[in-house]
Length: 250
Length: 250
DNA sequence: TCAAAAGTGTTAAACTTACACCCATGG
DNA sequence: CCATGGGTGTAAGTTTAACACTTTTGA
Image 1 (tube, helix red, strand yellow):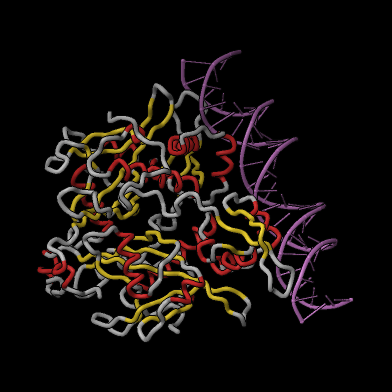
Image 2 (cartoon, chains in turn brown, cyan, orange, green):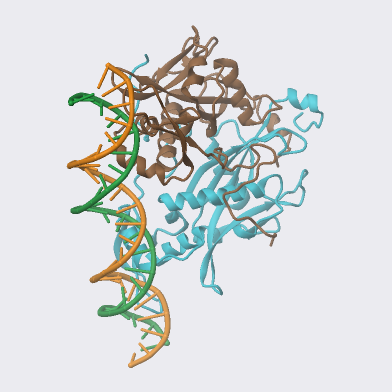
Protein backbone atom coordinates (compact mmCIF):
# COMPACT_ATOMS: atom_id res chain seq x y z
CA UNK A 1 0.00 0.00 0.00
CA UNK A 2 2.60 2.50 1.02
CA UNK A 3 5.55 1.44 -1.03
CA UNK A 4 3.66 1.38 -4.25
CA UNK A 5 5.34 2.76 -7.30
CA UNK A 6 2.07 3.50 -9.02
CA UNK A 7 1.77 6.67 -7.02
CA UNK A 8 3.57 8.24 -9.90
CA UNK A 9 2.17 5.98 -12.54
CA UNK A 10 -1.42 6.97 -11.94
CA UNK A 11 -0.86 10.59 -12.63
CA UNK A 12 1.80 12.49 -14.46
CA UNK A 13 2.65 14.78 -11.55
CA UNK A 14 2.75 13.72 -7.93
CA UNK A 15 1.71 16.56 -5.60
CA UNK A 16 4.52 18.94 -4.80
CA UNK A 17 5.41 19.14 -1.13
CA UNK A 18 6.50 22.41 0.46
CA UNK A 19 7.29 23.59 3.96
CA UNK A 20 6.36 27.12 5.05
CA UNK A 21 6.47 28.96 8.34
CA UNK A 22 4.48 31.73 9.95
CA UNK A 23 6.90 33.66 12.17
CA UNK A 24 5.56 35.84 14.93
CA UNK A 25 7.46 38.45 16.89
CA UNK A 26 6.47 41.22 19.24
CA UNK A 27 7.14 44.85 18.49
CA UNK A 28 6.45 47.79 20.73
CA UNK A 29 4.23 50.59 19.49
CA UNK A 30 5.55 53.45 21.59
CA UNK A 31 2.82 55.80 20.46
CA UNK A 32 -0.03 53.52 21.49
CA UNK A 33 1.95 52.24 24.46
CA UNK A 34 1.33 48.61 23.74
CA UNK A 35 2.87 45.60 22.06
CA UNK A 36 1.80 44.32 18.69
CA UNK A 37 2.34 41.14 16.75
CA UNK A 38 4.44 41.34 13.62
CA UNK A 39 5.64 38.82 11.11
CA UNK A 40 8.25 38.78 8.35
CA UNK A 41 7.28 38.03 4.79
CA UNK A 42 9.37 37.46 1.71
CA UNK A 43 8.68 38.82 -1.74
CA UNK A 44 8.22 36.22 -4.43
CA UNK A 45 10.94 36.45 -7.03
CA UNK A 46 9.37 34.06 -9.51
CA UNK A 47 6.04 33.00 -10.90
CA UNK A 48 3.42 32.35 -9.81
CA UNK A 49 2.46 35.40 -7.76
CA UNK A 50 5.69 37.15 -8.70
CA UNK A 51 6.21 40.26 -6.60
CA UNK A 52 3.64 39.38 -3.99
CA UNK A 53 4.51 38.86 -0.33
CA UNK A 54 4.49 35.31 0.95
CA UNK A 55 5.43 33.13 3.89
CA UNK A 56 9.03 31.99 3.91
CA UNK A 57 9.38 28.40 2.84
CA UNK A 58 10.41 26.03 0.13
CA UNK A 59 10.69 22.41 -0.84
CA UNK A 60 11.46 19.56 1.54
CA UNK A 61 14.99 18.31 1.36
CA UNK A 62 15.04 14.54 1.32
CA UNK A 63 17.41 14.21 4.25
CA UNK A 64 15.90 16.46 6.85
CA UNK A 65 12.85 16.16 9.04
CA UNK A 66 9.87 18.41 8.45
CA UNK A 67 10.83 20.59 11.37
CA UNK A 68 14.45 20.82 10.28
CA UNK A 69 13.31 21.86 6.84
CA UNK A 70 11.20 24.61 8.33
CA UNK A 71 14.11 25.81 10.46
CA UNK A 72 16.47 25.76 7.52
CA UNK A 73 14.20 27.83 5.32
CA UNK A 74 13.84 30.33 8.12
CA UNK A 75 17.57 30.70 8.38
CA UNK A 76 18.09 30.95 4.67
CA UNK A 77 15.45 33.54 3.97
CA UNK A 78 15.29 35.65 7.12
CA UNK A 79 18.32 34.68 9.27
CA UNK A 80 15.94 33.88 12.11
CA UNK A 81 16.45 31.07 14.60
CA UNK A 82 13.24 30.84 16.57
CA UNK A 83 12.99 29.62 20.14
CA UNK A 84 9.67 28.02 19.40
CA UNK A 85 8.71 26.05 16.33
CA UNK A 86 5.64 23.89 16.02
CA UNK A 87 3.68 22.33 13.24
CA UNK A 88 0.54 24.27 12.38
CA UNK A 89 -1.34 22.37 9.71
CA UNK A 90 -0.99 20.66 6.36
CA UNK A 91 -2.79 22.57 3.63
CA UNK A 92 -3.69 20.58 0.58
CA UNK A 93 -6.63 22.14 -1.18
CA UNK A 94 -6.91 21.62 -4.90
CA UNK A 95 -6.74 25.24 -5.95
CA UNK A 96 -3.84 26.43 -3.88
CA UNK A 97 -1.55 26.87 -6.82
CA UNK A 98 -2.54 27.32 -10.42
CA UNK A 99 0.17 25.38 -12.17
CA UNK A 100 0.46 22.29 -9.98
CA UNK A 101 -0.99 20.41 -7.08
CA UNK A 102 0.71 21.79 -3.97
CA UNK A 103 0.64 20.43 -0.44
CA UNK A 104 2.17 22.74 2.16
CA UNK A 105 3.06 21.63 5.65
CA UNK A 106 3.07 24.86 7.59
CA UNK A 107 4.90 25.55 10.84
CA UNK A 108 4.59 28.49 13.14
CA UNK A 109 7.39 30.07 15.10
CA UNK A 110 7.95 32.58 17.86
CA UNK A 111 11.07 34.71 17.99
CA UNK A 112 12.44 37.06 20.60
CA UNK A 113 12.82 40.77 20.03
CA UNK A 114 16.60 40.63 19.96
CA UNK A 115 16.46 37.89 17.35
CA UNK A 116 13.89 39.77 15.36
CA UNK A 117 16.18 42.79 15.25
CA UNK A 118 18.84 40.66 13.64
CA UNK A 119 16.50 39.51 10.93
CA UNK A 120 17.69 40.55 7.56
CA UNK A 121 15.39 43.24 6.27
CA UNK A 122 15.90 43.91 2.62
CA UNK A 123 14.06 44.69 -0.54
CA UNK A 124 12.63 41.20 -0.46
CA UNK A 125 12.12 40.67 3.27
CA UNK A 126 9.85 42.94 5.24
CA UNK A 127 7.99 42.95 8.54
CA UNK A 128 4.23 43.47 8.68
CA UNK A 129 1.67 43.94 11.41
CA UNK A 130 -0.18 40.65 11.73
CA UNK A 131 -3.49 42.50 11.86
CA UNK A 132 -2.80 44.22 8.57
CA UNK A 133 -1.65 41.30 6.52
CA UNK A 134 -3.62 40.99 3.31
CA UNK A 135 -3.15 40.25 -0.34
CA UNK A 136 -0.48 37.63 0.12
CA UNK A 137 0.46 35.03 -2.45
CA UNK A 138 -1.39 31.73 -2.65
CA UNK A 139 -3.73 31.17 0.31
CA UNK A 140 -1.26 32.66 2.75
CA UNK A 141 -3.77 35.22 4.02
CA UNK A 142 -5.88 32.41 5.38
CA UNK A 143 -2.90 30.57 6.76
CA UNK A 144 -1.78 33.63 8.72
CA UNK A 145 -5.29 34.11 10.07
CA UNK A 146 -5.43 30.49 11.16
CA UNK A 147 -2.01 30.76 12.78
CA UNK A 148 -3.17 33.78 14.76
CA UNK A 149 -6.10 31.81 16.04
CA UNK A 150 -3.88 28.97 17.11
CA UNK A 151 -1.50 31.38 18.81
CA UNK A 152 -4.40 32.80 20.74
CA UNK A 153 -5.51 29.37 21.83
CA UNK A 154 -2.07 28.32 22.90
CA UNK A 155 -1.55 31.45 24.92
CA UNK A 156 -4.88 31.11 26.64
CA UNK A 157 -4.34 27.54 27.65
CA UNK A 158 -0.68 27.19 28.09
CA UNK A 159 2.88 28.23 28.20
CA UNK A 160 3.90 29.85 24.97
CA UNK A 161 4.07 33.56 25.65
CA UNK A 162 7.53 33.30 27.18
CA UNK A 163 9.04 32.55 23.84
CA UNK A 164 8.29 36.04 22.65
CA UNK A 165 10.58 37.39 25.33
CA UNK A 166 14.21 37.01 26.30
CA UNK A 167 15.69 34.72 28.89
CA UNK A 168 14.55 36.93 31.75
CA UNK A 169 11.50 39.13 31.74
CA UNK A 170 9.23 41.10 34.01
CA UNK A 171 5.63 40.18 34.62
CA UNK A 172 4.58 43.41 32.96
CA UNK A 173 6.44 42.44 29.82
CA UNK A 174 4.76 39.06 29.90
CA UNK A 175 1.41 40.70 30.37
CA UNK A 176 2.15 42.82 27.33
CA UNK A 177 2.55 39.65 25.31
CA UNK A 178 -0.74 38.26 26.50
CA UNK A 179 -2.51 41.52 25.81
CA UNK A 180 -1.08 41.74 22.31
CA UNK A 181 -2.05 38.19 21.50
CA UNK A 182 -5.48 38.20 23.08
CA UNK A 183 -6.07 41.79 22.03
CA UNK A 184 -7.55 42.90 25.33
CA UNK A 185 -6.46 44.44 28.60
CA UNK A 186 -5.68 42.26 31.59
CA UNK A 187 -5.75 43.19 35.23
CA UNK A 188 -2.12 43.48 36.40
CA UNK A 189 -2.86 42.27 39.90
CA UNK A 190 -4.79 39.19 38.88
CA UNK A 191 -2.41 38.43 36.06
CA UNK A 192 0.46 38.39 38.51
CA UNK A 193 -1.27 35.95 40.80
CA UNK A 194 -2.31 33.62 38.03
CA UNK A 195 1.23 33.37 36.69
CA UNK A 196 2.63 32.97 40.17
CA UNK A 197 0.72 29.73 40.49
CA UNK A 198 1.77 28.68 37.02
CA UNK A 199 4.68 26.70 38.44
CA UNK A 200 6.88 26.80 35.38
CA UNK A 201 7.50 30.51 35.74
CA UNK A 202 9.98 31.15 38.52
CA UNK A 203 11.14 34.43 40.04
CA UNK A 204 14.84 35.18 39.94
CA UNK A 205 16.56 37.25 42.59
CA UNK A 206 17.34 39.95 40.05
CA UNK A 207 15.42 43.10 39.31
CA UNK A 208 15.41 45.24 36.22
CA UNK A 209 17.23 48.49 36.98
CA UNK A 210 17.17 51.68 34.97
CA UNK A 211 13.47 52.25 34.60
CA UNK A 212 11.67 55.38 35.63
CA UNK A 213 9.78 53.65 38.42
CA UNK A 214 10.16 50.95 40.96
CA UNK A 215 12.42 48.25 39.53
CA UNK A 216 10.40 45.14 38.75
CA UNK A 217 11.54 41.62 39.57
CA UNK A 218 12.78 39.46 36.74
CA UNK A 219 11.36 36.01 36.06
CA UNK A 220 12.40 33.16 33.87
CA UNK A 221 10.70 30.18 32.34
CA UNK A 222 11.66 26.75 33.53
CA UNK A 223 10.68 24.90 30.40
CA UNK A 224 11.27 21.36 31.46
CA UNK A 225 8.97 19.69 29.01
CA UNK A 226 9.55 20.10 25.31
CA UNK A 227 7.32 22.77 23.91
CA UNK A 228 6.86 20.94 20.66
CA UNK A 229 3.84 18.68 20.96
CA UNK A 230 4.67 15.10 21.82
CA UNK A 231 4.85 13.71 18.36
CA UNK A 232 6.67 10.64 17.26
CA UNK A 233 8.30 10.59 13.90
CA UNK A 234 9.06 14.22 14.21
CA UNK A 235 12.49 13.75 15.61
CA UNK A 236 14.09 10.36 15.88
CA UNK A 237 14.21 9.13 19.46
CA UNK A 238 11.41 11.33 20.68
CA UNK A 239 8.69 9.39 22.40
CA UNK A 240 5.13 10.40 22.91
CA UNK A 241 4.46 11.48 26.47
CA UNK A 242 0.84 12.44 26.46
CA UNK A 243 -0.80 9.06 26.59
CA UNK A 244 -0.67 5.90 28.64
CA UNK A 245 0.67 3.36 26.30
CA UNK A 246 -0.26 0.03 24.90
CA UNK A 247 0.72 -3.32 26.26
CA UNK A 248 0.12 -6.03 23.72
CA UNK A 249 -1.73 -6.77 20.56
CA UNK A 250 -4.99 -8.55 20.92
CA UNK B 1 11.25 4.59 -9.00
CA UNK B 2 9.95 5.33 -5.54
CA UNK B 3 11.02 2.09 -3.98
CA UNK B 4 14.75 2.55 -4.36
CA UNK B 5 16.85 1.81 -1.30
CA UNK B 6 19.83 3.70 -2.65
CA UNK B 7 20.54 6.68 -0.46
CA UNK B 8 21.66 9.09 -3.12
CA UNK B 9 18.76 8.19 -5.34
CA UNK B 10 16.50 8.53 -2.36
CA UNK B 11 17.65 12.07 -1.85
CA UNK B 12 17.03 12.88 -5.47
CA UNK B 13 13.49 11.58 -5.38
CA UNK B 14 10.74 13.71 -3.90
CA UNK B 15 9.27 12.30 -0.66
CA UNK B 16 6.28 10.01 -1.02
CA UNK B 17 3.07 11.44 0.37
CA UNK B 18 0.47 9.25 2.06
CA UNK B 19 -2.78 9.85 3.92
CA UNK B 20 -3.75 7.71 6.92
CA UNK B 21 -6.53 7.83 9.45
CA UNK B 22 -6.97 6.81 13.06
CA UNK B 23 -10.61 5.78 13.48
CA UNK B 24 -12.15 5.71 16.93
CA UNK B 25 -15.41 4.10 17.91
CA UNK B 26 -17.04 3.23 21.19
CA UNK B 27 -17.82 -0.30 22.19
CA UNK B 28 -19.62 -1.44 25.31
CA UNK B 29 -17.94 -3.86 27.64
CA UNK B 30 -20.96 -5.47 29.24
CA UNK B 31 -18.89 -7.34 31.76
CA UNK B 32 -17.12 -4.28 33.11
CA UNK B 33 -20.21 -2.16 32.59
CA UNK B 34 -18.44 0.63 30.81
CA UNK B 35 -17.62 1.89 27.35
CA UNK B 36 -14.24 1.48 25.74
CA UNK B 37 -12.49 3.00 22.77
CA UNK B 38 -11.78 0.74 19.84
CA UNK B 39 -10.24 1.27 16.44
CA UNK B 40 -10.09 -0.73 13.21
CA UNK B 41 -6.77 -1.68 11.70
CA UNK B 42 -5.91 -3.26 8.40
CA UNK B 43 -3.37 -5.99 7.81
CA UNK B 44 -0.58 -5.12 5.44
CA UNK B 45 -0.64 -7.26 2.36
CA UNK B 46 2.73 -6.25 1.01
CA UNK B 47 6.20 -5.25 2.09
CA UNK B 48 7.37 -3.53 4.12
CA UNK B 49 5.84 -4.77 7.38
CA UNK B 50 3.90 -7.46 5.55
CA UNK B 51 1.34 -9.08 7.83
CA UNK B 52 1.48 -6.41 10.49
CA UNK B 53 -1.52 -4.33 11.45
CA UNK B 54 -1.55 -0.73 10.32
CA UNK B 55 -3.72 2.35 10.04
CA UNK B 56 -5.90 2.47 6.95
CA UNK B 57 -4.55 4.81 4.34
CA UNK B 58 -2.81 5.15 1.06
CA UNK B 59 -1.47 7.61 -1.47
CA UNK B 60 -2.96 10.98 -2.23
CA UNK B 61 -4.93 11.10 -5.42
CA UNK B 62 -4.03 14.20 -7.35
CA UNK B 63 -7.56 15.41 -7.75
CA UNK B 64 -8.92 15.24 -4.25
CA UNK B 65 -8.34 17.30 -1.14
CA UNK B 66 -6.45 15.82 1.78
CA UNK B 67 -9.65 15.27 3.69
CA UNK B 68 -11.39 13.70 0.73
CA UNK B 69 -8.47 11.35 0.31
CA UNK B 70 -8.72 10.32 3.94
CA UNK B 71 -12.45 9.73 3.59
CA UNK B 72 -12.01 7.73 0.42
CA UNK B 73 -9.43 5.41 1.94
CA UNK B 74 -11.72 4.84 4.88
CA UNK B 75 -14.50 3.82 2.62
CA UNK B 76 -12.33 1.59 0.50
CA UNK B 77 -10.67 -0.29 3.31
CA UNK B 78 -13.27 -0.40 6.09
CA UNK B 79 -16.57 0.79 4.57
CA UNK B 80 -16.75 3.46 7.26
CA UNK B 81 -18.15 6.93 6.71
CA UNK B 82 -17.29 8.89 9.84
CA UNK B 83 -19.33 11.76 11.20
CA UNK B 84 -16.19 13.47 12.34
CA UNK B 85 -12.93 13.78 10.45
CA UNK B 86 -10.12 16.12 11.34
CA UNK B 87 -6.50 16.46 10.51
CA UNK B 88 -4.24 15.15 13.24
CA UNK B 89 -0.66 15.80 12.25
CA UNK B 90 1.84 15.43 9.44
CA UNK B 91 4.52 12.89 10.25
CA UNK B 92 7.71 13.22 8.30
CA UNK B 93 10.57 11.73 10.28
CA UNK B 94 13.46 10.35 8.30
CA UNK B 95 13.24 6.76 9.46
CA UNK B 96 9.54 6.14 9.13
CA UNK B 97 9.93 3.74 6.25
CA UNK B 98 13.00 1.78 5.34
CA UNK B 99 12.84 1.92 1.59
CA UNK B 100 11.84 5.49 0.95
CA UNK B 101 11.25 8.87 2.47
CA UNK B 102 7.62 8.91 3.52
CA UNK B 103 5.52 11.82 4.71
CA UNK B 104 2.13 10.85 6.13
CA UNK B 105 -0.63 13.33 6.72
CA UNK B 106 -2.75 11.64 9.34
CA UNK B 107 -6.41 12.29 10.08
CA UNK B 108 -8.50 11.10 12.96
CA UNK B 109 -12.15 10.13 12.79
CA UNK B 110 -15.04 9.33 15.08
CA UNK B 111 -17.76 6.90 14.04
CA UNK B 112 -21.05 5.96 15.60
CA UNK B 113 -21.79 2.51 16.94
CA UNK B 114 -24.27 1.72 14.18
CA UNK B 115 -21.71 2.70 11.59
CA UNK B 116 -19.02 0.72 13.33
CA UNK B 117 -21.21 -2.37 13.21
CA UNK B 118 -21.40 -2.03 9.47
CA UNK B 119 -17.65 -1.89 9.13
CA UNK B 120 -16.34 -4.75 7.13
CA UNK B 121 -14.53 -7.11 9.47
CA UNK B 122 -12.51 -9.65 7.60
CA UNK B 123 -9.25 -11.49 7.68
CA UNK B 124 -7.50 -8.22 6.94
CA UNK B 125 -9.62 -5.76 8.91
CA UNK B 126 -9.99 -6.12 12.64
CA UNK B 127 -11.03 -4.00 15.62
CA UNK B 128 -8.71 -3.49 18.57
CA UNK B 129 -8.98 -1.89 21.96
CA UNK B 130 -7.17 1.43 21.76
CA UNK B 131 -5.46 0.75 25.06
CA UNK B 132 -4.05 -2.52 23.80
CA UNK B 133 -2.71 -1.42 20.46
CA UNK B 134 0.93 -2.33 20.06
CA UNK B 135 3.34 -3.67 17.52
CA UNK B 136 1.84 -1.90 14.53
CA UNK B 137 3.61 -1.29 11.27
CA UNK B 138 5.80 1.78 10.77
CA UNK B 139 5.43 4.31 13.61
CA UNK B 140 1.71 3.73 13.88
CA UNK B 141 1.92 2.83 17.58
CA UNK B 142 3.08 6.36 18.31
CA UNK B 143 0.52 7.87 16.00
CA UNK B 144 -2.32 6.08 17.76
CA UNK B 145 -1.00 7.19 21.14
CA UNK B 146 -0.80 10.76 19.94
CA UNK B 147 -4.31 10.59 18.51
CA UNK B 148 -5.63 9.35 21.85
CA UNK B 149 -4.07 12.33 23.56
CA UNK B 150 -5.63 14.70 21.09
CA UNK B 151 -9.00 13.02 21.52
CA UNK B 152 -8.71 13.51 25.24
CA UNK B 153 -7.90 17.17 24.83
CA UNK B 154 -10.74 17.77 22.44
CA UNK B 155 -13.25 16.10 24.68
CA UNK B 156 -12.10 18.04 27.70
CA UNK B 157 -12.34 21.38 26.01
CA UNK B 158 -15.01 21.02 23.46
CA UNK B 159 -17.75 19.38 21.63
CA UNK B 160 -16.60 16.15 20.11
CA UNK B 161 -18.06 13.39 22.23
CA UNK B 162 -21.42 13.59 20.45
CA UNK B 163 -19.94 12.14 17.32
CA UNK B 164 -19.44 8.83 19.03
CA UNK B 165 -23.19 8.55 19.46
CA UNK B 166 -26.23 8.50 17.24
CA UNK B 167 -28.52 11.36 16.35
CA UNK B 168 -30.26 11.24 19.72
CA UNK B 169 -28.68 10.13 22.95
CA UNK B 170 -29.18 10.20 26.69
CA UNK B 171 -26.97 12.11 29.05
CA UNK B 172 -25.84 8.84 30.57
CA UNK B 173 -24.68 7.61 27.19
CA UNK B 174 -22.81 10.84 26.68
CA UNK B 175 -21.26 10.52 30.09
CA UNK B 176 -20.14 7.04 29.11
CA UNK B 177 -18.25 8.55 26.20
CA UNK B 178 -16.52 11.07 28.40
CA UNK B 179 -15.61 8.43 30.94
CA UNK B 180 -14.19 6.14 28.28
CA UNK B 181 -12.12 8.90 26.74
CA UNK B 182 -10.92 10.50 29.94
CA UNK B 183 -10.64 7.13 31.65
CA UNK B 184 -12.20 8.25 34.91
CA UNK B 185 -15.58 8.37 36.58
CA UNK B 186 -17.68 11.50 36.43
CA UNK B 187 -20.39 12.61 38.80
CA UNK B 188 -23.72 12.10 37.02
CA UNK B 189 -25.36 15.06 38.72
CA UNK B 190 -22.63 17.54 37.97
CA UNK B 191 -22.14 16.19 34.48
CA UNK B 192 -25.78 16.78 33.74
CA UNK B 193 -25.62 20.38 34.87
CA UNK B 194 -22.44 21.15 32.97
CA UNK B 195 -23.87 19.84 29.73
CA UNK B 196 -27.14 21.62 30.31
CA UNK B 197 -25.31 24.90 30.17
CA UNK B 198 -23.36 23.76 27.12
CA UNK B 199 -25.88 25.44 24.80
CA UNK B 200 -25.22 23.26 21.77
CA UNK B 201 -26.77 20.22 23.41
CA UNK B 202 -30.53 20.53 23.40
CA UNK B 203 -33.16 18.32 25.02
CA UNK B 204 -35.76 16.77 22.76
CA UNK B 205 -39.28 16.01 23.97
CA UNK B 206 -38.66 12.31 23.54
CA UNK B 207 -37.58 9.79 26.12
CA UNK B 208 -35.91 6.44 25.63
CA UNK B 209 -38.42 3.69 26.44
CA UNK B 210 -37.70 0.07 27.08
CA UNK B 211 -35.05 0.24 29.75
CA UNK B 212 -35.33 -1.39 33.11
CA UNK B 213 -35.52 1.91 34.95
CA UNK B 214 -36.91 5.35 34.60
CA UNK B 215 -36.83 6.33 30.94
CA UNK B 216 -34.21 9.02 30.35
CA UNK B 217 -34.76 12.06 28.19
CA UNK B 218 -33.13 12.11 24.78
CA UNK B 219 -30.90 14.95 23.67
CA UNK B 220 -29.41 15.95 20.39
CA UNK B 221 -26.47 18.01 19.27
CA UNK B 222 -27.13 21.26 17.46
CA UNK B 223 -23.84 21.41 15.63
CA UNK B 224 -24.11 24.76 14.02
CA UNK B 225 -20.45 25.43 13.57
CA UNK B 226 -18.32 23.11 11.49
CA UNK B 227 -16.48 20.68 13.68
CA UNK B 228 -13.47 20.65 11.43
CA UNK B 229 -11.08 23.39 12.52
CA UNK B 230 -11.36 26.60 10.54
CA UNK B 231 -8.79 25.88 7.93
CA UNK B 232 -8.48 27.44 4.56
CA UNK B 233 -7.26 25.39 1.68
CA UNK B 234 -8.90 22.35 3.14
CA UNK B 235 -12.06 22.70 1.18
CA UNK B 236 -12.43 25.27 -1.54
CA UNK B 237 -14.70 28.07 -0.51
CA UNK B 238 -14.30 27.53 3.20
CA UNK B 239 -13.24 30.66 4.99
CA UNK B 240 -11.40 30.90 8.26
CA UNK B 241 -13.70 31.95 11.08
CA UNK B 242 -11.46 31.99 14.09
CA UNK B 243 -9.67 35.28 13.58
CA UNK B 244 -10.46 38.89 12.92
CA UNK B 245 -9.15 39.53 9.52
CA UNK B 246 -6.78 41.81 7.79
CA UNK B 247 -7.61 45.00 6.02
CA UNK B 248 -4.78 46.06 3.79
CA UNK B 249 -1.13 45.48 3.18
CA UNK B 250 1.24 47.89 4.73
C1' DT C 1 -42.75 -2.53 46.74
C1' DC C 2 -38.05 -2.88 45.57
C1' DA C 3 -33.86 -2.06 42.86
C1' DA C 4 -31.74 0.99 39.92
C1' DA C 5 -31.09 4.67 37.12
C1' DA C 6 -33.04 9.57 36.26
C1' DG C 7 -32.96 13.77 37.91
C1' DT C 8 -32.90 17.85 41.72
C1' DG C 9 -31.03 20.38 45.84
C1' DT C 10 -27.52 21.97 48.83
C1' DT C 11 -23.29 23.28 50.59
C1' DA C 12 -18.15 24.01 51.05
C1' DA C 13 -14.22 24.87 48.54
C1' DA C 14 -11.83 26.85 44.75
C1' DC C 15 -11.26 30.04 41.48
C1' DT C 16 -12.37 34.85 39.00
C1' DT C 17 -12.85 39.53 38.95
C1' DA C 18 -12.84 44.12 40.26
C1' DC C 19 -10.73 47.53 42.66
C1' DA C 20 -8.72 49.77 46.90
C1' DC C 21 -4.49 50.41 48.68
C1' DC C 22 0.59 50.54 49.93
C1' DC C 23 5.63 50.45 48.11
C1' DA C 24 9.76 51.95 45.78
C1' DT C 25 12.02 54.58 42.48
C1' DG C 26 13.61 58.61 39.31
C1' DG C 27 13.01 62.99 38.54
C1' DC D 1 7.52 64.95 47.39
C1' DC D 2 5.02 63.48 43.57
C1' DA D 3 3.91 60.78 39.50
C1' DT D 4 4.18 56.14 38.00
C1' DG D 5 4.35 51.55 37.61
C1' DG D 6 5.37 47.44 40.99
C1' DG D 7 3.16 44.76 44.09
C1' DT D 8 -0.39 43.10 48.01
C1' DG D 9 -5.16 42.70 50.18
C1' DT D 10 -9.79 41.76 50.06
C1' DA D 11 -14.47 40.92 49.22
C1' DA D 12 -18.36 39.69 45.80
C1' DG D 13 -19.49 36.71 42.18
C1' DT D 14 -19.03 32.51 39.81
C1' DT D 15 -17.77 27.78 39.03
C1' DT D 16 -16.46 23.09 40.76
C1' DA D 17 -17.16 19.02 43.49
C1' DA D 18 -19.16 16.00 46.69
C1' DC D 19 -23.08 13.88 48.14
C1' DA D 20 -27.86 13.64 50.17
C1' DC D 21 -32.18 13.30 48.41
C1' DT D 22 -36.57 12.65 45.53
C1' DT D 23 -38.71 10.62 41.19
C1' DT D 24 -39.98 7.18 37.88
C1' DT D 25 -39.90 3.07 35.76
C1' DG D 26 -39.81 -2.52 35.04
C1' DA D 27 -40.04 -6.50 37.25
